[in-house]
Image: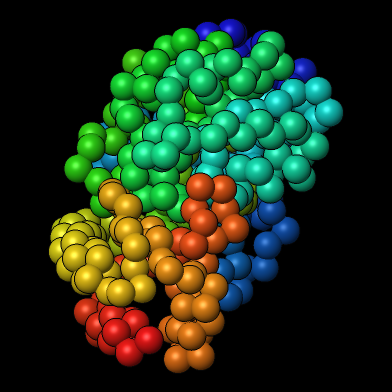
Length: 344
Ligand SMILES: *Cc1c(COP(=O)(O)O)cnc(C)c1O
């Protein structure tokens, strides 16, 4: 791996971060806060939230098997996807490499940051060889994006190939494990101590059932997380979100129950789909959705919309011709979808 200094934008490496009022007195116990121009009334919403979300990170560290200092929390994974561009890639000079097809935000953030995005096509099994990704890189490639389980294909990318990429690439490898709770594979975030160039993303939006609170996570070395902490907005995770996440963390068994149910429903739905005359193929999945190749995705999508049922039409995505992406809902929702498709 190149040194972090070589990988970081020079202006970010030397950046003097904003120092908030609450940062400056640390180490003392205080009870009169006349430092941040807050209103003394309307508690608890009058006070700025903890900029580093320490209580939440302590709790999360136990659940996720990492150290609190190895966690970045952001306004959804969106922030954890945008931030590495702002920290590591020089606009108009550097580039990133990613598997294709994959989650759309990696490219959108590259475009916003004026960073060249190099998609590398998966094979017909939606897999990729490390060599193929590495051969798309040059000296200005700062990041390789891998989403596993991948969206929209649903499958996990071969662990062996991901590890080869991490070992051989000189830059940073970001593995988005938004759906890893639905997979039986061991999460890669448990390997961040082994690989200083690995960043793993998780989210509260999927298995944790908290898409509305906007909370995304990045796990990486303390050094990488300190760079993120310098660059992020000072109060990037609001108080309500921090409180609600702490609430959710009180009952991780509830999440396990949801995941088990969704996995059961997933296999029921896939078996039902393959019986449908309109369905040509269902693809293997480790996520809370699956991809299905249909006889005519556009017509079936429109038909379902008419009935008030919304799935995702992925037809125009590379390698996903005539494919619909089906999120697993509750039993009632799933049955409604099936019965609509049986009447098609
Ligand atoms: C849904 C999803 C996320 C979650 O994004 P949030 O901004 O945290 O809601 C992240 N990555 C992938 C690949 C996803 O599909």
